[in-house]
Image (cartoon, rainbow, N blue to C red; front, side):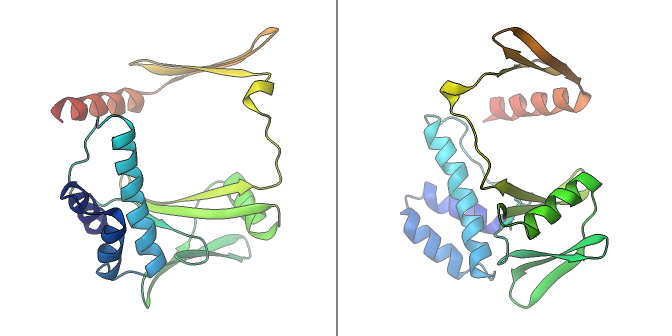
Length: 201
């Protein structure tokens, strides 16, 4: 899916209007229309972040694929069968990818609930390859859940990120409630990679 995103970014830097970029890239994408729109939207989201950050972190062309973003029921679908959940991805016309999802029982229970219950919603998903493994990251929301306003919040979560770990602490007016420290080598590696790439730009 990378060429569509790359072309959107290149045309933006060439001074094209975003509406025209969307039309041109979508027409030449050879993808299901909805999927092409999602991919272009992802490119525009990245560009928005770049411009919102005062032009810091300019996007460059990448050679590895971008995640494939799809809407539920249009670009991808789930089917409940016995003890498993099957999926179908329809990125290109008449060329479907089918298979069974793998995950924890908690993940399956949440996905099944979202598919069957009226107050839950299955949203966009991203197909990507991470650490040599294919993943389908699905967005699930509960439309009936009530969330307190920021002003009414009774618990504050503090986050401390350093080179060796990530620390989280939950605080209320009466003091600390709980805390956790995630000491994980991948955090250090990813942080180092991020700053190295930033310096090269």
